[in-house]
Image (cartoon, rainbow, N blue to C red; front, side):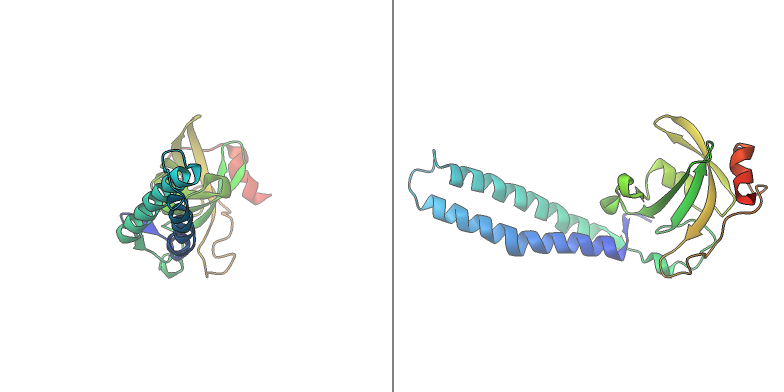
Length: 187
């Protein structure tokens, strides 16, 4: 799957494009037009700054238009297999220190690690792909290699507890994780 994006992510791109082309660009064109009518353009700050702003808006709009043509909208709610991690899944993971984290696998245009939205092409997402609850995956992170256990998998539109916490730790697909992290679900 190349360049997937969620429907919400595509809508955000479309809304930003519409804002640029229908609100911001016309306002800047008006300022530039007014400034150009004031005479000498070489020392006219409004004209110079307005032209720079116009070029920046045009670059961003061009980028957005290209991205909207290149992406494939994938609705995570339409995933048929909710027992494994695929595009759009919200996954609760635990690391070797038993710290839980919730991440959602999204397209690169909508990723924001601080919000828990990780790109489908990131190392963490590669490690989580096709994993099931209870699986342990190894991933290379900036701080070194780490093992993560899949605690829960949810998809938009599915029941909140689509897949509850794993009760056993024997389904590890690769690597190992500390017994403290595995026994957490029993407490």
